[in-house]
Image (cartoon, rainbow, N blue to C red):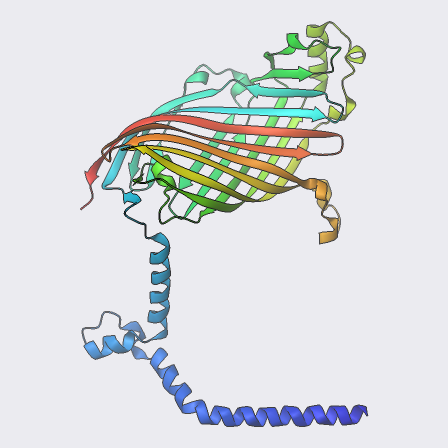
Length: 394
C-alpha cells in the first residue's frame, strides 16, 4: 500500500514538472521581453538627453521603484493648505524659560506611603533655528551656586515634532536635593513635621524614548503647537499611536529615613510601625509599552492656537530577576506586570508668521506595582518662550 502511495506521488510530481516546463516554454519569450524592459543599459542613464533612452529608462525596475517610493512619501507628507500653513522663513531666534518637575511616590499594600520631590529647576537661555533644527543653551538659575549635593544631577530631554510622527527622548539622573513632600504612616501618626524636610537619601535614574505616529497629519499639525515650524489655520485633531521603552531605577536609604523620622516625630522606629514591605534597597525595572491617544488643535482666534493631547500606554514592566531563566516563553509573562502609564501635553501659542510667543508643557507618568509595594513616577517640564522668524524662503 505504501509503495502504491509513493509511486502515485512520484508520478504526480513528474507530471507537474512537465506541465510547468511547457508553461515556461510558452511564456519564456514574454518573460525575457519583460526582463529586458525592466533591466537594461538605460537603468543608469537617468539624465540622458536622448528622448528614446529616457523613455526606456522610465520603464526600468529601479526607476519604477523610485517613483513608487516618491509617490508614497509625497502622499504621506502633503498637507491640506486649508488647515496648515507651512513655515515661510528659513531662520528663527527664540528666548525660552524651562521649568522641570519630578516626583516619586512609594506606597505599600497596607496604606503606608511616602512622596519625594526636589525643588523645580528653572532654566533660561537662547535658541537658534534653521528650518526644523533648533539648537540652544539654557542656564540653570536655581542651581547657579550649586553645592556638592547637586553634582550628580543630570537631565536631557528632547522632543521632536513633525507632521507624520513625534519622538520623545529623555535621560534623567537625580542629585541629592530631594525633599519629603508627604508621608503617611497611618491615622494614629502625625507626620506633618516631615513635610518639605530635605532628604538626601534618594537616588533615581530614568531613561528611554517614545515614538508615535500621527494619523491625521494632512490636517493636524503638532509642529504648529510645539515647534512653531508651521501654523494651524483651522481646528483639527488626530489619533496617535506609538511604542516606547523606559528603564528606571530607584533606591532609598531607609536607615537614614528612619533616623530622620525618629528625630522629627519624637518616636522610635518600632513605635512608628514603618511597613517592612516598603524597605527595599533598590527598584530596577524596564518597561516596554504600546500607546494610543488623541490630540486636538483648537484655533480659537486668528493667530491663536491651543493644543491638548493625552496618550495612555499599556506597559509591561519587568526586572532582571524576571529573565534569569534559561528560556523565557510567553507562558512566563505575568498579567500583574502590565500597568497603565500616561503622557500629557498642553500648548498655547500666538503666531503671526513673523513673531510668536507661548507656553508648552509635557508630563510623563509611570506606575510599577508588585505584591508588597508600588511606585509612581512623574516628571515633566513647562516652557515659556518668545521669538521671531527671519530670512524668508525663496
